[in-house]
Length: 634
Ligand SMILES: *[C@@H]1O[C@H](CO)[C@@H](O)[C@H](O)[C@H]1NC(C)=O
Image (cartoon, rainbow, N blue to C red; front, top):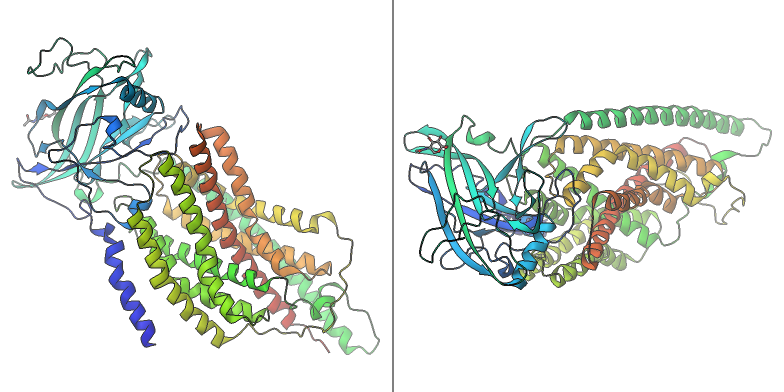
């Protein structure tokens, strides 16, 4: 008990370190008096595909990567403090040389001049062709381009702005592409008092202007020109970065300033798919329920009636295997460890979704989603330990130490190793998305100092509770399994069919999640996601129970691993769909991009497999304990 308290205290004391996303500048409202300086900051560059083009890279670049030749603030760029989740998700925030004073319009402010040689020019031009977007922030609010949604013709804020232009309004193609070096920044303010103004919006219009053409050294650049600025691949080009700032009054209060960024476009499509899934799932659940109830109760009454009658009759159906169902499967160790890790993921997903529904994880709290996931996962090591040791005990295992050790290390090691491998490729392509050493160290510390001790405690509690009670005894001699099964009851086809159903019920949200992971669309439809998660979990468990029943009726009692793989088989479809997504929506040149995509997709599928596998196994187990509890066995 005391150890538990101590651990809890240390967890809480680490929380502010990891969860300071909640208090980042921009999360707490800030007021300015007229003339006060409003801080700008910059974030990493990432590709941003328009609605017509495909995402061309998964690699982010630091804003102050010297190859871009952006203007630096006096005294050099300074990194801003960020939460663990924010760093993991690729945010790299620095201060910016751009200056704006509250209510003071400014025109043609020169940031700096650069001379860009051929090597840098070809680097920058290649990034423009990959449609990289620059990310600026004002007072913690992303600077956005105003865009119009194709279908609904609604205006919306699209975070980030293009590094350059491939063609102009008259569809004239630039060759080489033109660099955006002049910006009109429109900042919206909300007036609360004569000395109390708040920033509630920031839009940007980008221009390419060869503003140094014909300008003598020492003279100010010509912001009025309309000549495009193209970086020559031979020789060097002089670039002046300039901007205008315009302040505009707005009625939007500070509290809702993120709303224009976070519109769910066409929520009808989410509703449609959700209602669709719910209808299918309710049908499925009701059908499975009725079939199982009727046939199981009928079976039970017949079994019990047979027992009362004196005439000896052969048992049939699932009762035949009553002496076998609870016979431990092959590798009970691995199964129990996976079920433990899966339960941990289920708990993590559930709690994270609750936080998201309460509105804590809006993208305005940078990285809070990832931070909450990491913290809850760390704490729920206790659940992994508890479930793993109880399932292991139920399966008749006795190597406790190995079970505890594997629960605490196996799954985290696989994920951590995969992360490091991907990190290696990120470093290789000099992406800023590579997780810094300090963050990796922090993750290891969370794992070893909090997760492993909590797993230990969970395991000890689980061992004390012992295994689950089984309603029927296991025969000493294993039964013969009939050799012939219909094809659809063979392990692979049945798992794939069931997996298809569970994947289909969550398909649309998975599509949006992939879109936000491998595109630049922000995902925030958490309400839909939470409902979809519940629906998918329900589908998975009913489908698994149904297949489990079929298997047992076919007198095949090896249900343990089958239930797990049937539940988790949606992962196969997820992976396959990911490949389809790549083929249709991503264009990934270079080995690094391909490896990164496959790596992320495999990790995602692995998490899906373990999470829903555990749901499948546990529901099937619970169902079997119930139905075998109702028959009488001599
Ligand atoms: C600043 O520019 C905006 C937009 O052009 C204009 O509406 C506003 O009146 C200007 N403010 C000042 C103080 O000139």
